[in-house]
Amino acid sequence: MIMQYDWIRMPMHIIESFEVQSLTDGSFRAWIEILLITNRCVPSGRLPPKEHLADLLEIELPDPEAAIDELIRAGLLVVDGVWLTPKDWHLYDPNIPYDEG
Image 1 (tube, helix red, strand yellow):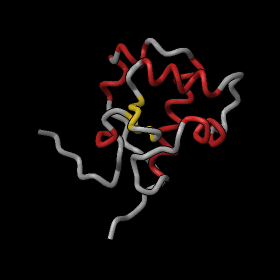
Image 2 (cartoon, rainbow, N blue to C red):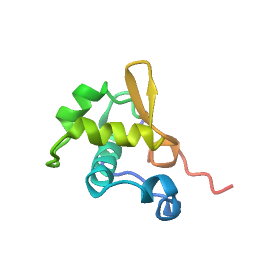
Image 3 (cartoon, helix red, strand yellow):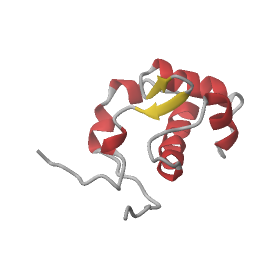
Image 4 (cartoon, rainbow, N blue to C red):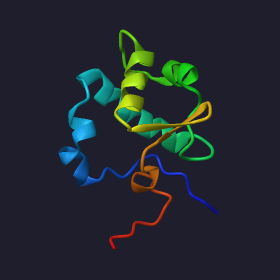
């Protein structure tokens, strides 16, 4: 049985990540919310296409799809056909055992 958690892990290395530091404020907030949405998706780690994902975002942005495009260009969201996946989702997913090694 896999337990679904209402939280994600947030690795400390993101504060030094060029991709994260280069985001606009709105795109950074969208990225954090997308990580939380990803944890609720089934299967965990797979997001709907960008048009549907933009509708799921609860933060107010002038152009949610533009924020998603910025995350794709920054390499923080990976396009797999029509689906999206956060880069290195295994680092954020609380359902995957943490490996310090």
